[in-house]
Amino acid sequence: MEDQHYLISEASKKTGTEAHVLRYWEEELALKIPRNELGHRYYTEAHIQLFEEIRDLKNKGYQLRAIKDLLSKNELLLPSENPKTTTEVAAPPISEEENQIIQAAKMEQFQSIMTNIMAEALARNNQALSQEVSSQVGDKLVKEMNYVLREREEQEEERFKRLDEALRTVQKNNKVRAEAAAAKAPVVKMKKKRRFGKTT
Image (cartoon, rainbow, N blue to C red):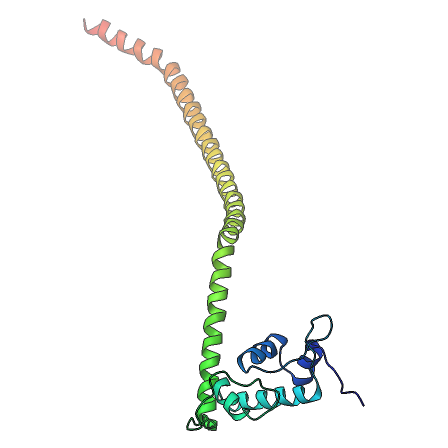
């Protein structure tokens, strides 16, 4: 029975690992990945199991160099040009506390990246946003100023009307007084003349 072959996209789905990561592991670990007549990679069940093992070791905190040493006897790895001495020890698995510290550091790094992305996006859109806000504020301010000016003009007009009425009233009262004074004036003058005439 012929072994099942998978394209890289299928292998990616089966292992839960992105295709570019599989290609990276292939290169770093010098994996023997066959290609079809079109030159496309294809993977067997053995490759899928190997990728799952690599993924599990990575999740435990092992570096690729240590994983390569651990898998050195696997027939899917190409023979190394510079064989490593057997005195090298693989990195020990990390504890739960160390894993939490690593996860916290990754979260902090992620938050920093997101903050930078947001700051950059705001900086790019800041000018357009400020123009839009200033336009809206400007329109509102112009309407408010027009309203205030109109109200002030109406108040000034009302004040001038009252002032005009007061002036007309004063003028009318002055005219009445002047007429009354004019009506009384000849009588007073005549009396004065008589008095002066008698005494002289």
